[in-house]
Structure formats: structure tokens, C-alpha cells
Length: 252
Image 1 (cartoon, rainbow, N blue to C red):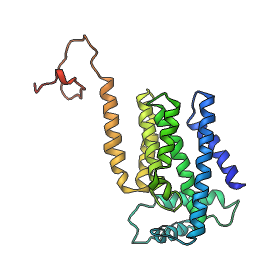
Image 2 (cartoon, rainbow, N blue to C red):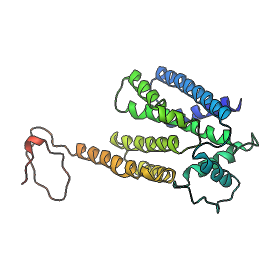
Image 3 (cartoon, rainbow, N blue to C red):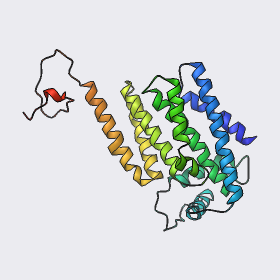
Image 4 (tube, one colour):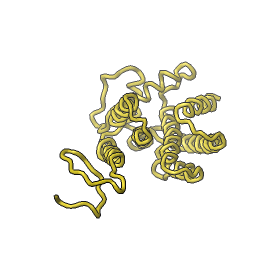
């Protein structure tokens, strides 16, 4: 019952943050989200049934998360090479759910965190794709493919950084796409900064996605806004970036 209510509340909040204009499309997204959430629950329960104890790198991640859940932030396993973002999320999740269950940081509950993260990943993938194409079928198909990508879906049943990491990158990617729609304001800039910092606290290799990838997209968007319209005379400038057509480009 707790998982069902969590899913309903989560969807309500998600569609307030990521609204779609067509109500029929919202219905499809809710339906596919329900299917995805059901699949993640089945997978996580199956994994926990077969492997109830920490598995692979979980022998490092789970004890560290449990230490954070107990408020022992001074404890750190030197064998862990990732930042503490995942464990901090586990701590806040424990604060929320400790009123409903005493097992707020057991193996099963910690693993279920990635199930929620995969659902958020699906919703943000829908939104990002929707800003690129207006085909609703393509939007849901692409987002569902991302969520069911074998390595990603596999780790949704374990307490690993992979799913939360992808989710954080998509959140930042959506904010960059919003800037292209003209939502380039102080709120968007601050949100993008916070999302990027959170992403880096989850996995340090996200530095590529937060700087090179998203930075390049933002640069291309800026160049497109400065694109010279056909028929206008060419101009010379110094210290500016220009998206000059290849036929007009030269070294001078």
C-alpha cells in the first residue's frame, strides 16, 4: 500500500513540475509509468529474494549509506571511489519514510531508491524528447527504451549510482533545453547550477556531461540565436562566436 501511495503522490508532483499540454498524452505517460514502476518492483523484489545480502559493490555502498542513515557522517570507507551523493539521497529518503516503516535503510529499501530514480528518468526523458519532436509515440517509445536499457534496468534493482546518475544528467539536460525555448532566466540558471552540482556529487565522471556535453549544447543554442538571416550583409566582429555557413567561412 505504501508503494502504491508513493507512486501516486510522486506522479502528481512530477506532472506539476513537468506538465504536458495534451491531457490524452498525460494519460499515456501515466499508463507507461505505471507499467515501468511495476516492472521495477518485480525486478527489485526478485533480486532481493535471490540475493538478500549486499551484492558486488553493494558491500561498500550499503554499509556507507546505512552509516549516513544513522547520522554518522564522519564515517567513510576509503575503498569507495564515488562522491557521497547517493548516500545523502538515501539519508533524506530515510527521513521521509521512517514514519511509515522501521526498515528505512535496510537492503531492500535502499535498492528501491533506484526504482524511483528510474521512474524520474523516464519522465524527464519524455520531457526532453518532447522538446525535440512532437510525435507522442516517438516520445514515449524513446523514453521507455532508455528506462529499459539493459545495464540501466539491471542496476535499478541494486543500490548503485548508475540510475541516479543518469537521472541527474537528464534533469540538467532538460534545463538546458528550456533555455532554448526562451526560459533563460535567473531561476533557470540557478536550477541548472544546483542540478549540475548534485550530479557531480553522485558520480565524478559526470563532469563530462555537465561541462563538455551540456556546455556544447548551450553554445550551439547561443550561436543559433545569432544566426545571420539570408539576405543580410556580412559583418565583421571581434571576440564573438558566430555560426557562419560553411560556404561563407574563410580564414580572414
